[in-house]
Amino acid sequence: MAGGTDELGVRLKVYEGQPAAVSGVGRDPVNLPMIRHWCEATGDTNPAYEGPDAIAPPTMLQAWTMGGLSGHGGRTGAYDELMALLDEAGCTSVVATDCEQEYLKPLRPGDEVVFDTVIESVSERKRTKLGTGYFVTTRTDVRVGDDLAGTHRFRILKYAPSARPSAAKARRPRPVVNRDNVGFWEGVAEGRLLIQRCADCGTLRHPWLPGCNACGSLDWDTVESAGEGTVYSYVVMHHPPFPAFAPPYAVGLIELAEGVRMVSNVVGVPYDKVRIGLPVRVEFRRYEDEEGALTLPVFRSVDTLGGLGGLGGLDSLDGLGGLGGEV
Image 1: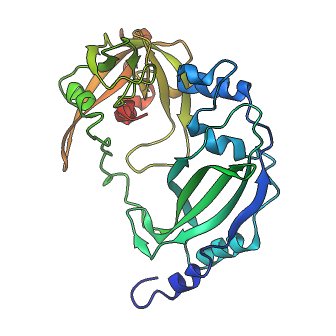
Image 2 (image 1 turned 90 degrees about the vertical axis):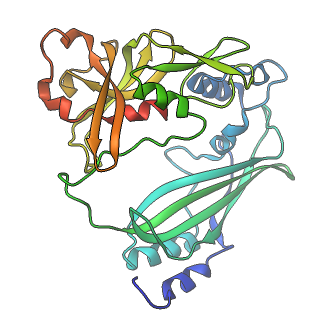
């Protein structure tokens, strides 16, 4: 795959425009129970999604096309051939990179959706930090009758993995800081856990967003969290391994006393002793490496503040708290 003419890329381009999956019909009509579950899971209280004139949240577009564990009956040969060519070339790993959706018509309870998917594009050969490979984009058109309701584009990177750095040389990953969440990270650097508050309806929200998901207002200020909360849910990470961390370690969804939730490491207690309802308190950790200083919020078990300390070696694992401003 190194140097010269990209003969593989030329072969892959042939598949553009070919079907990626059989055309299908949504397994269920658009329905209020699914809309309610979606809104509860995302915390979306928009009144447009309730009542006799309800519409489905536009971001549910893909949900109505999904086939569940049993699927829709498989893909066409074109998609399988494309993936086989990439596998043969050493591009055996895959990661989903992003998706784009375009909403053209509101979906309403009772609508029966139909859809078809094509291989829209295959990129030129790309070199990334993960490895060298190709971005493959599929496009799904979702219709109700003859009307196009929306378009869903899904992009993956099929790549040959780069050699992994040793754990000793791996640098701690940095959170993605942008104009929407920079205030959160500035607060963390000062040892303050800041929560966005809508200036119109007073709703608190996390992660930081440009607008209120309750009333839509773009005006906001902040309140400083007391940093106390409980473990609302958690997972124990075993795989895949990441060079900067040594699994297993616990990652918790922390419900703060103020009512919002954020993702962070649970520290100061063995990973297999983390439990739902465990009381925790924020702790700001400062790190120094080649890229400079980094401060991350993690949550320490209140039950162990008096003496269990770093049981289980977890102090060497805390650092995923940086996800708290992103997830």
